[in-house]
Image (cartoon, rainbow, N blue to C red; front, side, top):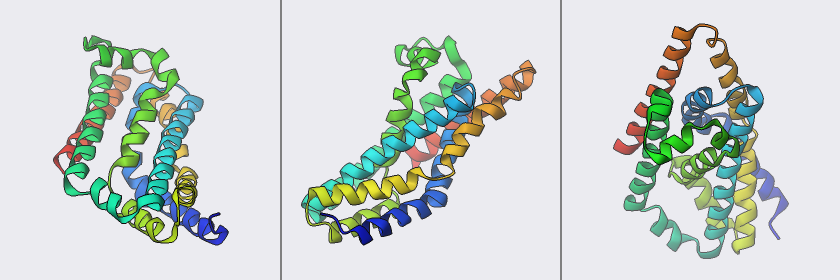
Amino acid sequence: MADFGKLIYIFIQGFTLGMGPCLLVCAPILFPYIAGTRQGWKEGLRAALVFSLARMVVYSLLGGVMGYIGFYLFNLFYNQTWGRVIWALAGLFIAIAGLQIIIGKKIENPFCRYLSQREAYKNDWGMFLLGILIGLTPCLPLLLVLTEIMFIAQNFFQGLLYGAAFGVGTLLSPLLLVGALAPIINLKFKHREKLSLLFNNLCGIMLILFGFYLILR
């Protein structure tokens, strides 16, 4: 069984990082994505929650894997090649989302046409996939926490619990508030067609630029 004191310690780490570095990375992605695709604070909050839950699942599984085979998989999974592939996939997904927001239903690609349907967003599969990709993207805080889990976990189950504790900590962050506020801010422009179009285009451009930034880095 995992040590309760260590669980609390890693939870606090997740909460602290969720208030700082994780928020700075995820907010520029989530805000324009949710603002351009959701209506009402409830939909925005649910989208941010799905995104955060997907990250928590990834952190839990990575923690379990670190507890099971530790150092060897750590070097294999997060070597330079895999890191580049994951960053590129995340960037491509985000850039496509931004393009979809700008062009909307004019896109003929089946995947983008699926995303342009509001019913598809109710399933939140796109947001869940985005959460998985962001959860897998290597960043220094995550690497440090996984390294810590590698040393304190004695088996897969302990690592899974430590990873889940970290994920719950990141879940309880202002990111949920960002998700809830994004559609509200967008609705402020709805009664002015030109401002609404400008706002949506800016959201799409932000996502495209951020997606290419992830790919290029």
